[in-house]
Image (tube, rainbow, N blue to C red):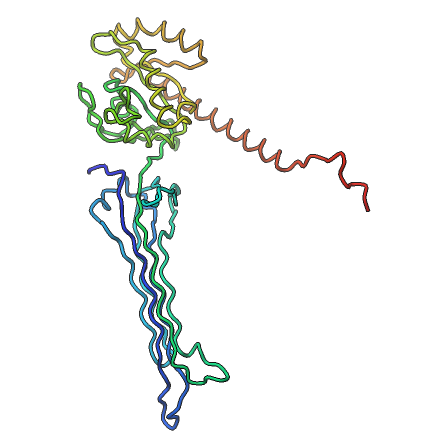
Length: 362
């Protein structure tokens, strides 16, 4: 299946049906009153999360989506039927933008979430609605209101607990395949990963977390270099980040420089990403070059207060410890968020007194 994470659609809600002008023609009542019904409401255009979808591929070649128009009113007080809404099913994590203004108008992150992106027009009133004491037989009816139209851009941001970031060929895909049942393409050449991959990592009975691997970043990725810039948004929702570094085949790269390059690209793309709870992992620790580089990197990161974990995605060494450290990091983040929320709630509940207030007035 092709991974499509951005599409543009023109959506048009249904027009309201016209109201009717009609009169009763009953036996023995040749001059019966008005009987024109209202037009039906036009159908809405609705975006709805479908958890069975993981890509926007189904919408790739749909240039326009239009809901049904409301039916016109009829005689004998009959109102027109409302138009059927058009439902656009999207994967969880879809962000909705007004394509013309660039304004974000929706964010579909919950499993059962939906939103009306274009509202159908109201039906016009029939002439039975215009009876007055001075006009008992009105010949007036309203036209239906046109439905809303908008050009939208849908962007998919994957939802994951742990985001993997690293330069090409550090072994991110191998790690995802080793820790989960995901089967990304793996090969010994740069940019093997061309699309984001998700894997569910089991950590106990009924407990798991989701790990996301995005294509390898290169220096200048935030400015459009390489393949990573397009996919950086997929780690914006991740709870924690694992920065992966590894020696190149010749063992000539500086792992601290590689880590700093990753931070620079993340900060340039979204400053909040650089401050996301994270740790650094040295992959390929089974290689002598990685063992030799570990002490210097550990000292440098310790001075910055950054945690370091070592492992080998190829042999499995250190992977159990990596999972435990990631779970601990996620738990620390949740506790920190809970504490911040409690403190904010306490501050909202407490109202500071005013020394010059009116407590003594009556």
